[in-house]
Length: 134
Image 1 (tube, rainbow, N blue to C red):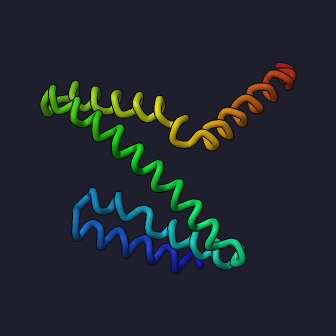
Image 2: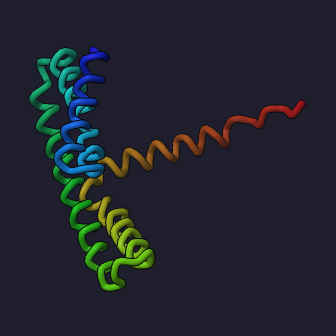
């Protein structure tokens, strides 16, 4: 499967580059991983593949809309400073702050899972004694 996925990745990147330049190459980077995920899903769990696809699609749409809204507002604020480094930094900062602030409302279960994992990792690091220095 690896040679086929590599060929798809290269072809998608070439097509994206031919159509949209460097932005198209970056944008095409999702094609091969998406096909790999679909293949693994359908071959590994065919009985629940459609449910997982719907659930993943819903999650992807929520995150996409949140990112588009937050970073779109950030870009609108950044435009006020013109095409400058300060405008770009302000746009990125506003978009990031909005995204992080709104994420718990859009995806509470996912945020709770990440926070629980971070807390468990911090507890595990505190519980492990430091290695002796030789």
